[in-house]
Image (cartoon, rainbow, N blue to C red; front, side):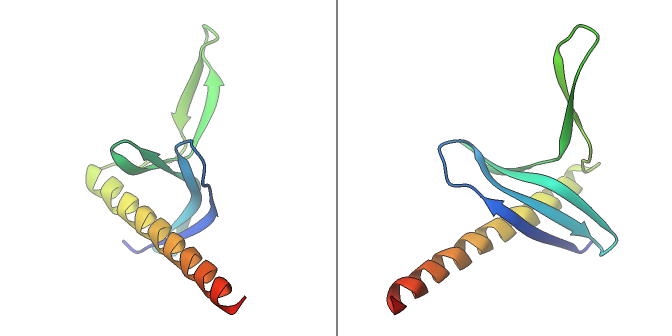
Amino acid sequence: MVLKVRIHKTFNNDKGLRAVCSVTMDEMFTVHGVRIIKTEKGFFASMPYETYKDADGVEQRKDIFHPITSDARHEMENAVIAAYEEKLAADAETVTEETVTA
């Protein structure tokens, strides 16, 4: 499967959310709203979800999209995290170039 990841926005704060992206699969389907989360164990891709209240009024979360197999999840997470790291490197390079020319 060919995965193309587009990083839409990055965040640099004390919270776990680091970026929001979309993933296009085999140039046929796109999933929007994939979040890159940083935890103590490293990064992971959080799939888009919707929230709702169950019959008891307790807020629940249901994935809108998710990989079926662990291999598919690893493949998607690896592509998303690699794209995020490339974006950070490119942003750092741009800042360095702006500093040198200023």
